[in-house]
Image 1 (cartoon, helix red, strand yellow):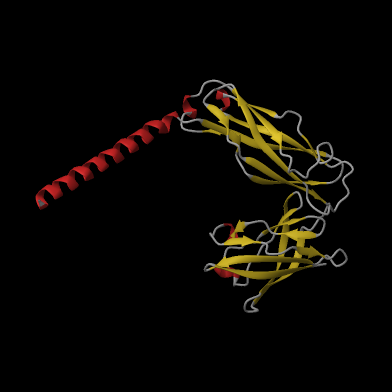
Image 2 (image 1 turned 120 degrees about the vertical axis):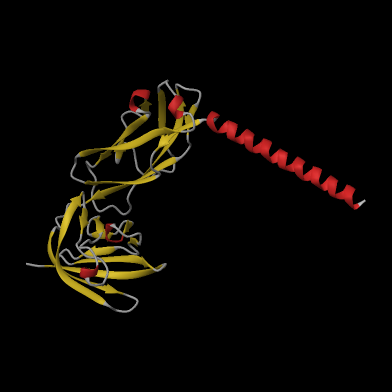
Length: 275
């Protein structure tokens, strides 16, 4: 009786194992027959421009990805639509001359949507940065390609003109233990209202490469975008609150945090211009 019981269990186990093999084989067979997706390369990005009346064009990258993209030969047209949740106003903050992006085999199904940032009549600083949300809404040209349904959220930073590059005396202070580090260094301008310092943290720079941190200015409001420590370590560096610029003295105050041993450590950096 026990022998019969064990035989039945063995047959049931083999049947279950065979079913799993059939299901797995079916899924693998379908891996190279799925639909390819067209859409934006990024999900979030920032557009910054000086509000001086100039129009600035920004290319937003789009592409096709999928299991059979290497087998495609027909060109694909991707149509982009503005989401109703956008706070940016067409004709005031932005313009899109052509909402259809042609993705061709000759260009490896890579393309760009040009978004024009309008600054005429914009009085800075704005209370809030307008947000433009774009949807990859439709595709035509190949039955094996469809839009991926993902959005691109664009923060539009209308900046005031500044010239913060120069020599400063800086003091970094670590909030948790009050330790400080100070030196004289140069702040460099690396983009539209974007700057790069020469130090970060409160440790001896001889133990660390002479790298600093990137910060953005929006009409004397300072923010620190996410970046990695000294541009070489995996520690996250980011702004934990907004900093400021004293318009009279030119003193720049930056608030940032460094993830150290899994704990976010807040720092304050005060840059005083050297005459």
